[in-house]
Length: 273
Ligand code: SAM
Image (tube, rainbow, N blue to C red; front, side, top):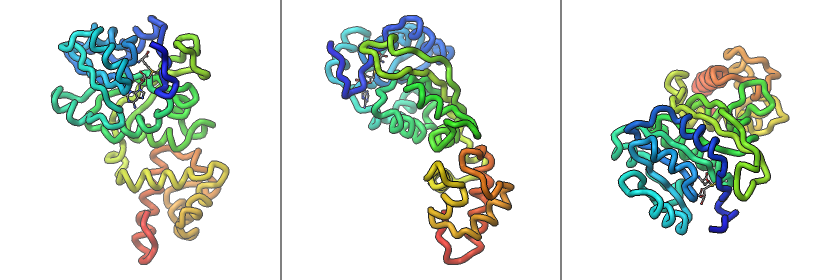
């Protein structure tokens, strides 16, 4: 079947990588695994050999039909659907457990898939995902590194992420223009532990990173936070007034969010975060 570039179809042809991906999911005996974009089934076979059940979510009609001929329905359920509309909560309830997720992702919707998984975190245990190498570097970066930014903080607030291994374009057919990295993401959200409210905190982090070249104080000012409120809150949180958002740990972002909330609620008429 010819690959459809519009659907991000770069099929994995490296059997060793397939084994490494499947092994990275941990012991799958009796467990239910969701595969995002199974394609022609390169990874699906390794999953079916290990897991209790595989839920394969594929948008391409022809590939979905092909997969149904390759695997018995009692081992692999093929759902022809856009994964962005997939109901992970219902699948988890039916399986009676938090799901493991795996996918050599269609790169054109990587961010949307990550946000979808984050929003479904209560139904998920961990994910092993293949993304463009530069994206994996950003997802897993720590404070102070060149790659640390909004994507790192957003993903890591839903649980730790670590790079596992990188593959060259030749591991795929057709080869993409970029290297690809497999990373692991364990779902263990930090919001309650850090005492922050999820939506408000993520909105605040977006404002903090709005312009990479600006200082944090300037980004907060540009977001409509009064300079005097921002500087008192930064001092309370122990943050250097000249700091950039790229230098802040998740804990420092949470401390600043708290200080801003406190400062803003003490000053009537100031819009809240
Ligand atoms: N897992 C296969 C492999 O490793 O060879 C295929 C991976 S390929 C990079 C991405 C797969 O995602 C393709 O099969 C593509 O049709 C599928 N896909 C693209 N958009 C999708 C979407 N919105 N929902 C579900 N699957 C999608």
